[in-house]
Image 1 (cartoon, rainbow, N blue to C red):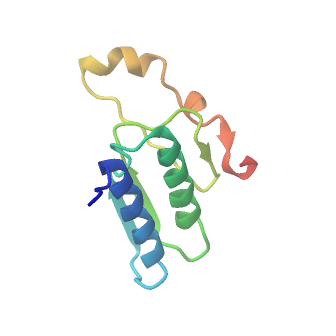
Image 2 (tube, helix red, strand yellow; image 1 turned 45 degrees about the horizontal axis):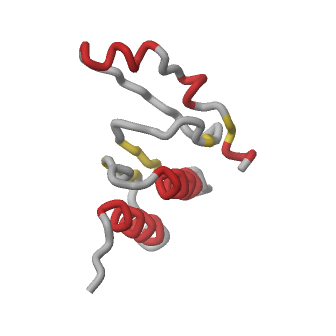
Length: 110
């Protein structure tokens, strides 16, 4: 029997949860580190699906907690990014990391 990788299981899990959104009413969703183990191509696709699902009319608010985001992800005006850089070991990374470099392309352009 063939087993899925951790990233493939994460993709399946998040798409299943997004599909359940239409039948399970709740005020918000929290997704923690779902993108860990995903290759960049799947991570980008899953992010786009999460943004689409969370910014639709009448959909619950979504919180995506992650230690990393791919550069140049497309965002919509309905998305707020809060970045928290903590600790001396992150100082070099935090110096060149800005909202402008993170949010270069609006989601509507995709």
